[in-house]
Length: 137
Image (cartoon, rainbow, N blue to C red):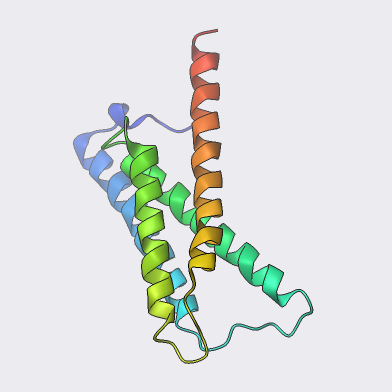
């Protein structure tokens, strides 16, 4: 079981937060790298569906990582903060793709990303409510 942040020393809290933001940065770099590839077609019949699922998942993961990084600092607003962070990065990612040969950024993909962002947000909200109910029962 994880040790609550409040029980860690200040130095250990800083290390944990640093690691969490490092993971956010690494994941964002991976998204950026994938977006910089000129052609991500797999050649499979389900290529379109696979790419949309990848969009959804990569932004659901980003949202979860940002939630974990923001929570200790802004526990009351971490869901909204993570949602806005991930949505902003989705728009930046699609804009970036407009400059990559063979790629195009679309609002449709921002919408698919938002489904992943929303799923991660609703999942965390449900998990948080579950923990509160269990705490008071």
